[in-house]
Structure formats: structure tokens, C-alpha cells
Length: 313
Image 1 (cartoon, rainbow, N blue to C red):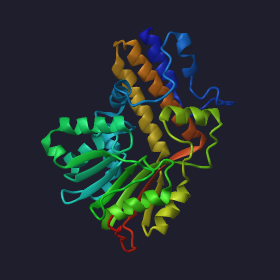
Image 2: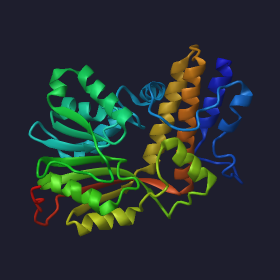
Image 3: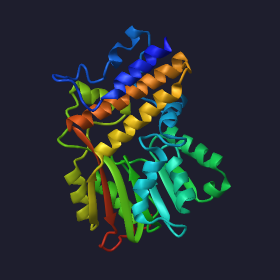
Image 4: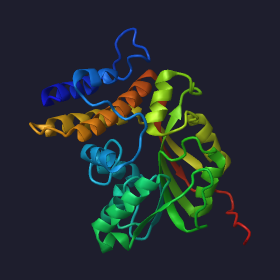
């Protein structure tokens, strides 16, 4: 493998990923990833796993403890509107590799009750918090949870931050579990991928993206989530399409990675992990650009209905 050709491929893949060529089809939406092996580069693995190699690539892209575009700056940007402080306890769903939970403690002084659905990410998050020191571990925890059957301590948290966690889970049970976990007047900030129309699981572009990201094609729509929030009594103040911002942050991260490589030659295993991550992000960006999926932010104020306390078991 030659480093110049590897860097050239990365530059090609992320130079203009949001602008497919005329006549582009699902056969080309990987931006030459399919021909990687033929160009002397390792083929990406066929299934996504949050193994150490992939975690390392993600954190080289987005920062220590972060797994998505924008890293700590974007996490702070999303969390700031709810006014976190040392008096607030936050329910964090989609804790990732621990960076967001640590940031909420160090930047805002908040207490964080974090949950993550992926066991490998949850383990990474626990390790990240431990490395951050006792001041952080005293105030932040990250546990495993099942998005299909979410259960949280009732009336315990002041606010909630939800990061790409609903996915294909039933909307109202998921949101109701959050509602029950919040104190009166609690606020929620959510950033979720939504489908403009039902995704076709037989579409090669959709199938490949879902395979690489380890997600179901059953994404909800923005109106469906907004209506569910309203039915549960939430005051929906902001519904914002942040897809363009997400794409810009993605491109910035990849350009920085390529520049940072300098003359460093990645090992075959490192190169394979980078190529895998590049394919995943390229497919995601292409689907956003096509309008098939969007990233949407909600900011809602506390439910006005009376809290329902579950019957004791």
C-alpha cells in the first residue's frame, strides 16, 4: 500500500461527497470504495463493529471519547440551550464512548445519568470516564440499556439529551419513558436521523448504509416524532434540520484527518479501519444529500400532563 494513493483516495472520497455526479446510482455511491482492493488498499470489513480499531479511527476524527461529527464542540452546542448547571441531573441517551458525559461534567458541572445501547461503546464510555478522573466519575455514569424496553428512574432527572438513539424503536413508549424520568418543567434536546419517506430495505444504497452502521432501515419521520412529543404533553419549541451542519462537520473532520496523516504510513489494519469508516460516512452523506435521510434537532419543554408513577412490583 502506498501512502500517497491512500491519501488521494481519501481526498477523492471526501472532496465532494455531497455532490454526486449526474446519473449517479447506488452502484457508485461508495465513491470508489468498491475498487479499493484493486488499488492496493485493504478492503473494508463487511459488518460494522465498535472494536478498538474502529474506535481509534472515530476518536482520531472527532476527538477523544467522541464517535460522531463535531465531537465535543457539537455536543456542547446541542446541550447548551437547556441551561445545564451543577444543580442539574441529565439523562443522556446515546452516550457513545463517554466524551459527551465527561463534557457535561467538566463544562457545565452537571450530574449525568448516561445510557448506551451498544456494549462495546458502553465499555469504552466507562473507561473514558475513569480516565477523566474521580471528579468526573463521581458525577457521571454510563450503563447499558435496551431502546426497545427503556426503563429509567422515575422523576429523577431535570433534563434529557438524546443522541441518535430512538432509531427504529417504537416512538411513544421510548419518549414516555423519558417523560417519566424527568422532573416537572424538564427539557429535552434530541438529535435523531429521520426518513423523509419509508426507506426501502431492498435498495442497495440503503441496505449497505444500514449494514455498515448496524441500524435498521425503519427510521421514523420528523412529523411522527413531533406529533408523539405533542401527544405526550411536551411543548415543542424547536424542530430544526441540521443535516447541512452535520455534513460540513463531517467533511471538516475527514480533511483534518488526511492533513494530519502527513508522511505517516498507516498499517494495513489501520488503513482497513479508516477505509471502513470512510465508506460508512460517504454512504451516510450521499443519503443525506439525496434527501432520503435527515438529521433533525428537537428542543422541547416539560410535559404538562401529570406524571404517572408506575405501580410498585
